[in-house]
Image (cartoon, rainbow, N blue to C red; front, side, top):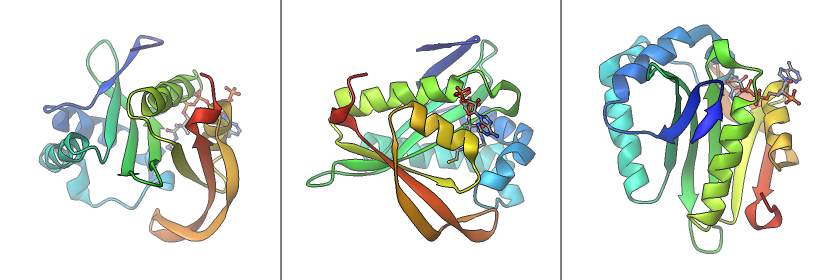
Length: 180
Ligand SMILES: CC(C)(COP(=O)(O)OP(=O)(O)OC[C@H]1O[C@@H](n2cnc3c(N)ncnc32)[C@H](O)[C@@H]1OP(=O)(O)O)[C@@H](O)C(=O)NCCC(=O)NCCS
């Protein structure tokens, strides 16, 4: 799907390990405050290739959905993932995303999250998506509010981000409630 600014949203695929490692190296400082602490190994093509294989296995059994944003040189410049899909009475999953440091502020995250949420509702029949942001991640909170998510509370010491267990704002979107 075309997201504008020369950027496409497409499913993660085998072969994305090396371009993902390059993207994570390029965005190391940009992502560090918002993600778990990474070992040096994380930035290698071999580690990302293993991670891609693992994620694609999760996708194949319906536990995840994984997308990348790519530019016209096939560089990976962002990700949107749905993980921990639980069916039955919950029909819910978790959302994660990032956008390359050079491409923020153009509405790419909002358009990509909106499209993945649409697929979660229309193609997978999910009921709910949950997301969590650090209390000071104003840009991410803006993305969520702009794409139909509502704040549902604050979870103390919820995720270990940048090496510290940190409080998070929790958001959810009930998919059937939103027309777009
Ligand atoms: C959060 C992130 C994904 C946003 O991506 P993006 O493509 O720039 O997002 P968009 O352009 O779609 O929307 C960003 C919105 O936040 C606003 N914004 C940006 N920085 C802001 C700030 N410091 N304070 C308040 N609002 C801010 C923008 O103005 C925009 O809102 P608008 O459309 O009403 O103008 C990107 O900054 C990123 O990758 N950050 C690091 C990783 C991360 O935080 N991931 C999410 C973890 S929960």
